[in-house]
Amino acid sequence: MSFANFEPRAHRFSDLIGHVIDTDLTELWMKGIKAVLSLLILTILIALTGGVVKTFLDIGLLLHAPVEIGLRQIIVDTLILLAVVEVFKTTLTYFSEGRVKVTFIVDTILVVMLTEIISLWFKDADHMKLLSLGAILLALGAIRVVAVRCSPAQGDGTGRGSSCGREEI
Image (spheres, one colour):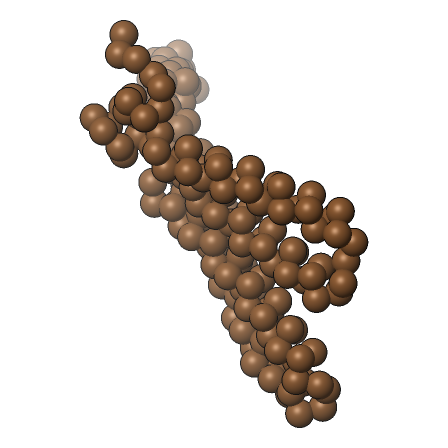
């Protein structure tokens, strides 16, 4: 191999290294995130389908157990499925918009907390535990109201609505 053949190869190699260094890896990371989120969405759909099948099978409790027990189980199962739907909605929003809305997260937590309160209510739980969960539920409700009122979608699109207590600078 002569020196003349080596120089173009070295030039191509340095061009390749320069191209790799100049490449913005953001696109690669976004593709990776979309791939992982696609798997997560598929997992949530499979779990949701399994939950619906289990809830349908719980209808059999109405034949073998007191109606109250069967209906309690169906109510709790349904509320849990609604929480999974909220998680699914949050995941889809992140997938499409690249961000998570606070209201979706709070909605998910509200549904889960309501499910927990109803489940504990059915089990005749301690009143202090129910009151503490109720207080958390009220706080989450307040957070949700504030999140909706101070949403960037309100007002001029900057999240600087007068209802948020922020002043223009």
